[in-house]
Structure formats: C-alpha cells, structure tokens
Length: 138
Ligand code: SF4
Image (cartoon, rainbow, N blue to C red; front, top):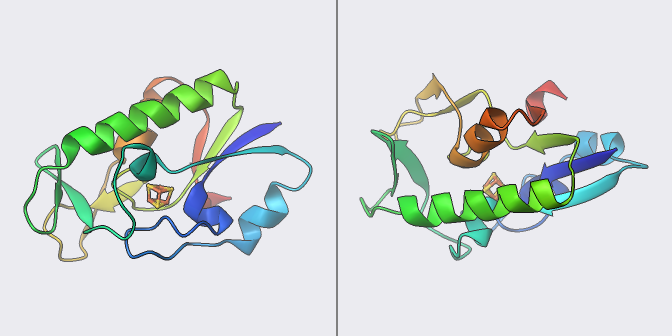
C-alpha cells in the first residue's frame, strides 16, 4: 500500500514552530508500506519556523493578521498533485492543522477553540475521494 503522511508526523521539523509531531504509532503502522511524505505548508513556500495560522472566515490568516491563503492553497494543490502522481491509497494527517486537519480545526480566533472542519489540504483530498484519516484515529 502507498501511504502519504504529514511530514511532521515522520519527524521532519516542518511545524510552524520549527519542531515536529513525530509519532511512534505512525512509524509502526507504515512499516512495510511505501511512504510519501508531504508538508503542504512548506510546499507552498512558507518558511519554517513561521507565524501560526488559522482559517478566519474561510481565509487562511496568520496570527499577525496577514493573509497567507494563497501560500496555503498553492501548497495544498502541490501536495495533492504529489498524492495523485504517486497513486496514494491512504493519507494519514496531523490533527487540527489549518492544512492537514481532518476532523477539526481551530476556529480562527487564535484562542485554542476547536470546531468541526478540515484544513485546506485535507479538504481537497476528501473532496477527491481519497481515503484520509486523522492520526488520532489510526
Ligand atoms: S502542514 Fe501538515 S505536514 Fe506540514 S507541519 Fe503542518 S500539519 Fe505537519
């Protein structure tokens, strides 16, 4: 099986704060499978570390109030093309990210409140019918 994984879950330091979300559970699950690593935010040209962003009224906006929607969408499209080009069977994504969140995201107030919804990349995958799961549901 070909499995795409949020790069931060594989230990890549591509998270907004320069860290990662390494998951031992993911490492075990993907053993013996072909793994494709994707970080849509890095693919969109955003630097690491970067100012955290949330989806505010449908527009990805960073905590300083700058509109970063174009970078997020460009990165999500590039990551999606990589998924399609590799005929990926399953995507495992990091929770609550404005790009990768599958079940819920932050509500756009930068206050830690969560709402049901998807990040930009996860939404594209799900709309395309690609099996996509939140790492918490692994
Ligand atoms: S965009 Fe996705 S892969 Fe990249 S750091 Fe955020 S959650 Fe991880």
